[in-house]
Amino acid sequence: MMTRYETDSPEAVARLLALAVTVDGVPAESELAMLERRGVLAGLGLNREGFNAVIDQLCVDLRKGTRVGDAGDFSVLRPAQLEMMLHEVQSLELQRDLIALFIEVFSADKRYQPAESIFLRSVLRCWGADEVLERADMPAMA
Image (cartoon, helix red, strand yellow):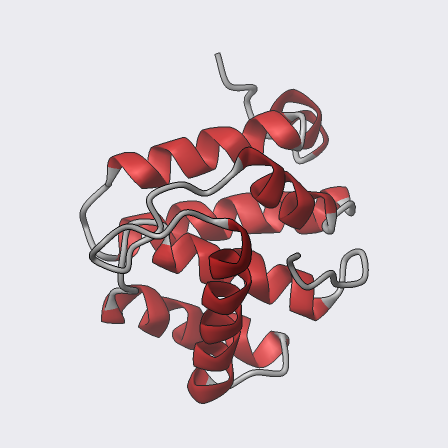
């Protein structure tokens, strides 16, 4: 069973950011540096060491309910696990901010990975992308 966090809490937000930086494997230094430079970590009350602890806890939680491959990677992130994490963020403003941050994270290392696209599509589907993007004055996704 995964750790549950209060709705819209800094912990829930930090865990989703941790998932975003690890969804394609090991976090890239450029991704972590971007979060630090933009003040995102500080805004969550974290420094780099604290964010690494969030990543570590995410890995512990994922191992509880995920099939782990021979190389130690997460071969399957169950949709229910991702949905549970996403449902912990209900504020449309937080959702909009996180979507923008996810895109920045995925752009930081100058390489888009298939896992990042799958993650982002799952986020948009779960949060009702049209509603989130409409209220944020952003164009709807086709």
